[in-house]
Amino acid sequence: MKKILITGGAGFIGSHVVRLFVQKYPEYQIYNLDKLTYAGNLENLTDIENSPNYTFVKGDITDAEFLAQLFAETSFDGVIHLAAESHVDRSISDPMSFVMTNVVGTVNLLNAAKSSWAPSGFAGKRFYHVSTDEVYGSLHNPDEFFTETTPYDPKSPYSASKAASDHFVRAYQNTYGLPTVVSNCSNNYGPNHFPEKLIPLMIHNIRNNKPLPVYGKGENVRDWLYVIDHARAIDVIFHNGQTGDTYNIGGFNEWKNIDLVNLLCSIMDRKLGRPEGTSAQLITYVTDRAGHDLRYAIDSTKLKTELGWEPSLQFAEGLEKTVDWFLQNQSWLDNVTSGNYQKYYQDMYANR
Ligand code: NAD
Ligand code: DAU
Image 1 (cartoon, rainbow, N blue to C red):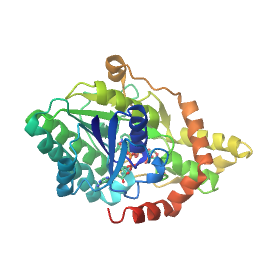
Image 2: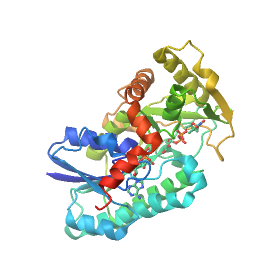
Image 3: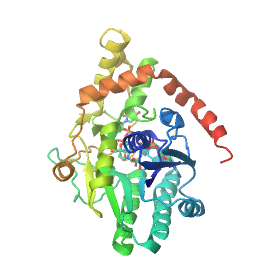
């Protein structure tokens, strides 16, 4: 029986990772540690919440004492660390929350794992840190891709906090021998994506005939990967990745924001029975994001050649599935946009 701690498992990507591990590995005990910030939603996990190999723990990774107690009570074999503040726009208005959760929280978790594991040695243990391609900065030459050896050049408070956390993880491997592995992934999309992010925000606003805010001229490029393919990559890297190594995850799927928004408008027109071109009239160019990175593009060749991972879905199929999921789960979106999801679960866990 392996005991795996997954942090941030009530969030967008974390919930898909938790589901995959709970369903695929009944012999593992999966612990989902999450603070349930505005981005944490246990409604993402209702289908597996009663599984015998799943335990939810409400807690804050910035609380070192709480983590020490948790690791003393439960002897974890592995950690998959996803808990973070994840939205770039929020990092511009409130950088300190990103320092606290992404940097201090990660170091607290490293300390808790090190203290718990060191006395009996690190054999069989693994600390997996989930990071982002944004740590590499912004590409301007169309032939360039981010590889595992691209120098770090973070440009937003969010990416600076993730870069700092990546450095701490590697420093703990180098200094204390903590067995770590890091992955850096491109933009995810799919079911349960929080509607402050581009794709779900656009789907929500198209459905409700609200303006579609495109930053600047809409020329920034992002490299999109279906969230379940990210979860599959995490599974492969957690089990087969080399200790101390880094893996880039991406699907070679670059889109200019404005082209992506137009594509979403067209898919939604078809699905909502609106005349083609109706939703595109909602596009509204707004003030650009401060310090907006121009282009991200991941080279995931290493992950494919060394560990055999490839995306399972083409973008057209993934986007159709995503739009269908949001249209079929309007109550999820309504609960999130109204704030109801927080009231229900926060009351439920208030005293735990
Ligand atoms: P998210 O914002 O949807 O979820 C984050 C989760 O972490 C939430 O459930 C939240 O409640 C929890 N959390 C936040 N602060 C916490 C704290 N102090 N203690 C415990 N839990 C806390 O994020 P996401 O988009 O699912 O991203 C997950 C991870 O993957 C992050 O580390 C992010 O940097 C990374 N990542 C995201 C993307 C993407 O496109 N979304 C791409 C690459 C990497
Ligand atoms: O690259 C991985 C990163 O992708 C993750 O590490 C982050 O956690 C995740 O939030 C995401 O960051 P981005 O800033 O790329 O994602 P976001 O959805 O916020 O924006 C995508 C692009 O769309 C970006 O160029 C900004 C633009 N945008 C975004 C919003 C919310 C708009 O034009 N209008 C909007 O309303």
